Length: 384
Ligand code: CTP
Ligand code: MG
Image (cartoon, rainbow, N blue to C red; front, top):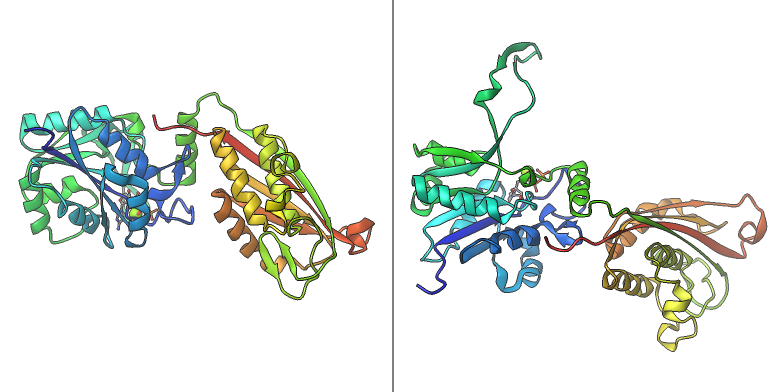
């Protein structure tokens, strides 16, 4: 019996993360620079015994998850509902597995000790085991009109978490029989007539559902390390051949900006703001305005290299805000598009606003474009 795992952890990360609103499925949202699903896989692999880790992800992100997780997990595509995703994970278990834990990637900070405690309890009781915490609030049962019907005795209540553990054979049987959707695996198990007990949960096993939950998780990872702000300004004159490139977008019909690169003042101001926030100098010093490698280079090239520098120095972007001062182009119609393109490049929210200078100065005379950016960066938290 060398290394054949008797425990498996199925980590479900196939949800869309609608309530978090990060624009990508929640399991792939970074927490301290590390995607939630990778954090959950790391916790499972830090258990006290060999485990098979199965990671269930949206079908569209299966390749990306395989690249991210490598040999650390078996990656399978999930289903429409959480229950279908768990079923897909169960189908990938290896033969030696006797105990299965099912875990939400959304509970990314649940510690390995909690996984170990749940496995111990499954082996001890032979039944289902869920971690739970006492309920602190007073809970009321309501009628359809919002009238209070009763106060529930909260000493009888538990707010349950994951990982939830089960003997493999009984869980598979319960999943085979399930005739409706349940909100957790313990409910599927109990519906098949199987016993479930609650063991003490862990405060770090809270579920990341909303942006406030994610912010709280970030704070827990980097206690006392304040974010840093930076500012960047760039100006380019109109001139040269071709078409305008601004905020990484092409602007057909608009005159181009002059410069050694493509003159994308928005991208350059953002680079300076990020570099200044991280204390890494400025774009001229880092990338050399005369360096032939950057002749005609697009704004996206500088942004990618700036991000790589930031990460190499232990920082990650928090958010970026940039304002364009220009008589043209008319920016408002493409603001959302610019924000989406820049946010995707930077991996953090970027907001872009624009103003004219009321006919005053070089921007007012339409001689060029100015951009002013501020950025927030945080020390990147490593895996715990
Ligand atoms: N999940 C899943 N497959 C689904 C739906 C949910 O694997 N079809 C997973 C989620 O990825 C998450 C866990 O189940 O790890 C708990 O679900 P929830 O917190 O609701 O996550 P999402 O469904 O992604 O979020 P939302 O409901 O806000 O869209
Ligand atoms: Mg959901």
